[in-house]
Amino acid sequence: MMAESGSMPVRATKRGDERTPLGGERDVLICGASFAGLAVARELAGSGADVLIVDRYEIGERQTSACGIPTGWLERLGLMAAERQRFDTLVMHTPHGTSRYKLPWTFSTFDYRELCQLLWRDCDADFETAKVNGRAAPPDAGGGIAVETDRGTISAPLVVDALGWRRMLATGDGYQPPDAPLSRGLEVHPDGSSEDLAIWIDRKYVPAGYGWSFPAHDELRIGIGSFDPRFHVKDTTVELTRDLGKEPNEYQGNWIPHKLRRATEGGVFFVGDSAGHCLPLSAEGIRTALYFGIALGQELRGVVDGRQGRAEAEAAYASFHDTHEWKFRWMLRVQKLIPKVPPRILAPAIRLMSTKRFVDWSFEHYLRIAPPEYAGSKWAGSADDQDGAGQQQGDADHPLERERSLVQAEQA
Ligand SMILES: Cc1cc2nc3c(=O)[nH]c(=O)nc-3n(C[C@H](O)[C@H](O)[C@H](O)COP(=O)(O)OP(=O)(O)OC[C@H]3O[C@@H](n4cnc5c(N)ncnc54)[C@H](O)[C@@H]3O)c2cc1C
Image 1: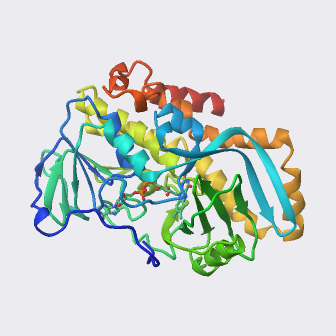
Image 2: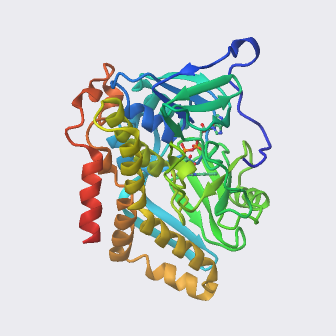
Image 3: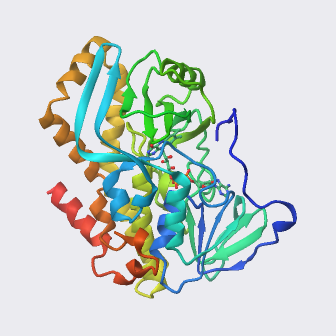
């Protein structure tokens, strides 16, 4: 992670004597308790599996993004209580003018801590704060995978890496910025309010990438994302923030993958940013982390229930991941193309693209890469469902099957 500066959030994570040794064997070990890890754990709720989830911070302690997502995903997952603001229009600023795109679906900003706590409330896993250092050893004869943490070594036959772009449980492929296919993002969170969900395509702020202002009720999340990892975004994040009449605070940045990586490796399952599930071009990685997290959770549940072995789960999850490869490839092509388009062509092109027909067509296709319906109806309304009855509906409408038929229909 890039160095952060400015005021830092208060650390709630246990320290010193509170950090007792950790070890032993679990049925499932999920490393990383953000969007991807929590989505997997939630799918395993009620399965009877002994699931442990570990993260170096407490759940929801460290916000990792501007927290913008299509509203449909919050609805389907029963997470509407975390919503902060909703938008039906995207405002795009260029040096040559401003276009307003009326979206065919709405987009929401949410509160990170609250969303994580809502996801966690539906889980029945154990949670521990621990820093994951990597694999302790190759799988043992029984297929158990040992993971080394700063509190000890934990083993499980089913291990998930939801740790973000570092992909700590991989064998090590030298994937390091600035040479790896990673974008760079940084944002600040000054107090303020606005009705506009806005982005800036302006080389004054970033040669390849975009700036954003995502209002969230009483704060603005203002940032810059660069597709080129060598471009330092701090100065222009400050510039955009000041151009909007605000002072930068609470800097928060990270590397953002823009290329898919293998879904499984050495018996470990990878999900979210660790599998490169963040979409190129938009750098939207929350709904895809949830989407692939649900898919993986369903496959692991199949193993826990005795419907399949780990090898079958690996094959099914990898094949599901692979069916999305062409969509990610196309988004990456557009991401690479945009910096090459001369500004005098880009501005009229952006204006032309604001026709209702084009906006509806492109944004509907974009949403379909990871559509909210994929989450099924299992969790809808679960924020009001204190008994967790939302979990009881079982696998009657298995989302993997639904998505497979969606993908097949699209390919046909
Ligand atoms: C500035 C910025 C703004 C963004 N805005 C948006 C947005 O508005 N909408 C959107 O869809 N996407 C956005 N993204 C992308 C999005 O944040 C990621 O794609 C998304 O967070 C991926 O979720 P994840 O669960 O895979 O990983 P993460 O959210 O990165 O979570 C990884 C978890 O693993 C933990 N962890 C990491 N290393 C270790 C370790 N060694 N030991 C223990 N725990 C560890 C971390 O503490 C964290 O909880 C943004 C990214 C950036 C950088």
